[in-house]
Every structure is written in structure tokens, then in C-alpha cells.
Image: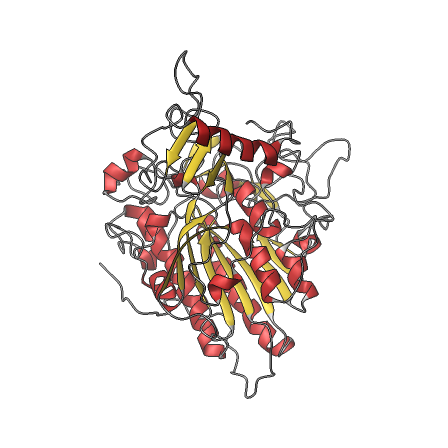
Length: 521
């Protein structure tokens, strides 16, 4: 069953407000960044002629704006990608880099410029809604221990959920925040509004979903799939752990969407004429794959494809809200993903669908499948429709672009890895954005791309695809070098055939990481 290829609302907006009778002049555009979680380049049907997913609303966004064909995240996992998006800095520049589930300590430095702080200085009201996964500072029950879950014999953490958080996204430049601390498959499962947990009564996730003795191990949960399903539970799982008594995993995406829509409505009435920035960080199609019932059977890629349809509808609902409020023309609407899809070769064979279409590998990998992402930007007031941009850009570049858009100058120590593509938004699609870009794999290994070449000083995927690491043999290549112009699937390793290019790119990478002794290089 397919659904209409036009924008349409499946859910009603929970907050319905009358339209404004008059508008106050606003110089800078509103900015909305919709960040999908683990959505591959090939999950967008306009990017993949063989897609078994169907994304008419994201396709429409691309047709009305710019579709970036060579966009990349800075890392092939959530944490490094999100850090780079918000700060314009590669994650390897930050140390230490540990982050455990949603319990981790703050990763964004206190004095670090972010998209939020930048736009606050330009007069924006800013909001972070959805998945955070960049660390928080929780109040503790016992100040002599950390927050790591499983600290006692019942598997509960040392967090005092009744007390305000000591660090939350407001400290990173967001006037309002409504977040899930980590991914939707990792505890703690609780919403946090600004500095307070919404429902601090914490019980174990197994009490709600499986009625078993509390424990903190990884388990499968087949609540949403039948034994006849080809995945037999794959993709519909989460780690056991602490959960708010009222929290339901299957409702999370819609709650986040409703919060985003409500924020947009509030700005029209509370701050007329003042621009807003909404960072709407979704929880799908990352596991657990729990699409709403309205989307069951909407794709030919099983429960995963149906979840992609649910994500597509989020874009529809946000876009329809802008139209209804009369602010679509002066809103910069960005849709992208934090990394490539967690979609293996076996998954491709199962559904004949390649989530990371046109790339080798998957989430976690140093190959393009790990970090080649969809990126569509619509801004009707300034961007001509149906523009294709082939310039290499990264999520790190968004902060520099917003800096130029708002007429601000970034400080030398801020957003050092960000390059503005504002000129692309204004029509100069053939002017290059950057001369090199660096990626970090799930295991912390690095690669650099420049001039159509890509170099990594190790062998293997560096991530989820086996083998992650291959020990070099005598007389064999010690690293990887690919000519992406003729070998976009990174199949032909030219490490031994092009020693000059290896020296050039390795030198460029060494210059970037020479002061970071803790990086696997």
C-alpha cells in the first residue's frame, strides 16, 4: 500500500491556535534543523531509484529546495556527529570522549560556541527538542559514586531524578529544551524539560514491557513483531534499564514531534517578529523500530521501511505547520541524518533495499556508508526550487553557514572545522565549500577526503562491518586509498599504487591530529 505523493497530515496538531491577523517584520529567517537518527542516504526515495522505502514529503522538500548529493556527517555514530553539528568542531578534538548511554557527563565544553549560542546572539529564541546524547549532569543520590547504572544489586543508577539537573541543553545555548537523554534503545527512558525530569517516578523497563524481575542486560522484545516476520524481532529491541513510569517507547517520536510543533506555535504569539531556531532531533529510524499503526505496510522494507514512512510524516507535519502559520517562505528548513543507516549486506539481500545507496559499508564504518547522509534544505524566500548541489559539505558546516547568514563572525577558536556554504543557498552551487573533510569511525579511527581521494591509515571498516580491523601483512598495504571519482564504492585500494597521494593525504591528516595523542590514527 502506498500513500499520496503530496504533503498531507496524518496526525492532528495537539495545539491549535488561530492564525495571526498581522505579522511583525522579521529580518533573519527562522531555522529548523530536523535530524533523523540512523537514516541512510538511500532511504530517501528521490536519492535511490531502487528504494523500497517511500518518502514523498522529504522528496518534496528536496524538489522545492537544494538536494546535497555529497553531504557527510563528521562521524559514523551519533555522539561524534551531534557534537560536530552543534559546535562545528570534529569530535577528535575533544578529550575525554567517553559517553555511556544517556547517563554520560556533558561533552560540550562550557566555553564552546554552539549553534544555539550563536543564534541567541543574533536575537533568536532557540530550542532543542528530541534526542540529546551529548551528556548531562544529573543530581546524585550518593555524591561519592558516579551515575553509571547497575551500581547497586537491583540495577538502579545513582541518579536522583526528583532533583533538577545541574547541566542541560540550556547551558549549550538553548532557551528551551525537551529531550531524551540518549538513544531510544538505551536508558534512562525519561523526558527532561529544561532541568527537570517530567516523570521522576522510575521503575525498570522490564516491569512495563515484560513483567519480569528487574535486570540490566540487553534483551530482545518481540512485542511489535510476530514470529512470522522476516526479522523475528530484529530492530525492535532496547536495553533494559530505568524508565519513567509513564514513558512508552512506542509513543516517543510523536511526543517529540508534538513538542516541536507546539514550540513553533508559541513563538508566533509569545515572540512575534523575533526569529526562532528549532533543533528537532528525532529518535528514528534508529532502533527500536516502532512505527505508528497508521504506517504499517506502507513500504516494501518491512517494519524498518514503515518507520521511515513515519519519519517522512514528521517532515510533513512540520512543513504543514509552517504553511498554516504563514511562515514557510522565511523559514530555513533543513532535513538530514546523524550518520549512515545500520543496514548490512544481509539487510540489503533481505529486502532488496540499500539504505546506504551508492556507498560501501554502514553506520559505524569509515567507508562512505557510515557518514554519507541525506541533506535537503528549503528556504522559499531565497532558494530556487529543485537545485542539485554536488559540492562536498558536512554537518560541521552548518554553524559557519548560520554565522554568515546572520552577519556574525565566528571567533578564531570557535567552530574551527566549519566552512560556510551560505553561497550555495544563494545560488552559487558550483563554488566549492571546502578542500578537505575528516571522518571518524565507530572505533575512533580517522579518514580524510580531499580532491576526490580518500585516505585512511588502517585496514578494515573501523566500525560495524566485519572485519573492523585487519592487521597488515608483510608486503601488503598498510592503509586505504580510494579514487572516489572513479571508485565511489571504495572497492579498489590504491594505497600501494599511489604513494605520492598517500603522503599528501597522510600529511594533511597528521597536521590536524598531531596534538591529539589519544586518537587512534
